[in-house]
Image 1: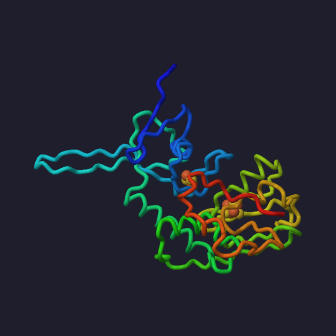
Image 2: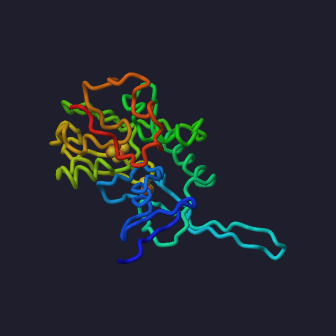
Image 3: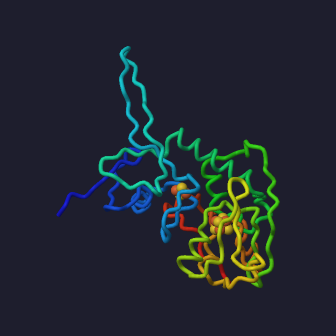
Length: 256
Ligand code: SF4
Ligand code: FES
């Protein structure tokens, strides 16, 4: 039998199987690494960068006897394979700061007015912001002006909250085999589109039971007639912070 392989995550030894990424091995071992676009049922996407870690930092001694830390490379743990003996830093101030900045950028890029959003309390972006201690937006608000599409009988789309994780795109293509969603545009005009001649969701064959209709980690793809059903205090992240559950699969299936 070959020796079990391990790497170190914040100095804790984590076992892994050949071919696993750092985040897969960490989550399997019960260690939370923040993530938004990673979902265990889909190929890693690598777009949100929330799962960034530092790999193999070194401490060297200078000629005058000072210890100096040389930071290792920053990498997305959802796309980086685990390697034996690797030293990975996740819960360190520099990486936590970087994640806070990324969350702040996402929060100002869209219209995340949580008090009026049905997803509040069970939204991965909001849950991460609380967990990371994001206290202010820091950057100027972008005030996006994207369409709200209410053309579908069962599903509502508020594209002003989209974080372009492409989970719905991947779910529709890979699981539902329908290709209902796609991404269009470049740079800050990049946005989610629906694959119908009119461009409206109501003219696609999306069903409320499709994986794509139940995978959005934020408040974009919402089920009509199902809003604010869970009382404050009992919502998913009211009960426990996001980091309490290492495997933050995209939100649990909605009632339809
Ligand atoms: S609609 Fe939701 S699942 Fe789809 S790309 Fe936007 S945030 Fe991700
Ligand atoms: S979870 Fe790794 S880049 Fe999004």
